[in-house]
Length: 199
Image 1 (cartoon, rainbow, N blue to C red):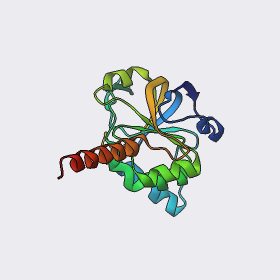
Image 2: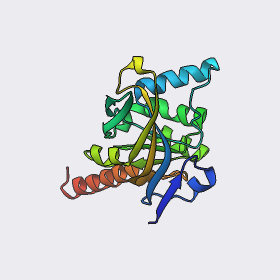
Image 3: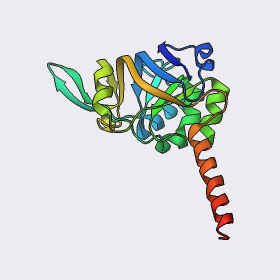
Image 4: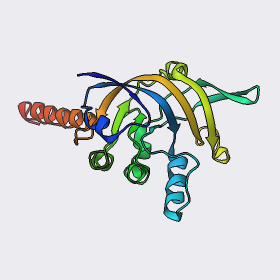
């Protein structure tokens, strides 16, 4: 287990060094995207319409932040992670279309996302649920917001962050998925116990 501090845009070479259980901190541009932002971004990609922010090399955060408009600008009060399995339907295609390098959320993601991360060079960084204020402290400014018509939680927020973390690398770019490994071990243990109990 090693600790890495990466600055966006992150290169594929930097990502390939990371392994499951490494600790990661991100500095630079981080963009939020939940279900609706993923859907709209992918619709734009299919229509050949560019996004206003180039996502290549960036970190995408599954988050619906709590924000306040203050003095003509935005202040982030809390930024807890959204459960990432909600985005499993879109994430593989999103990674392939936009070349994001780090996906941040909670609860892990599935096989399709794991395969896309191995193919394209990306990782999943698990952030502790319930630490929304800690996350907000690492957000130094709001550079912009897109698609507010989707609602504040579903809009795409563009943050500048400093030492955002700690994130645990739970899916690496070599095909390892910590969440899937734990689930597999739990299933094997359960079956072993059932056999001993003749169930």
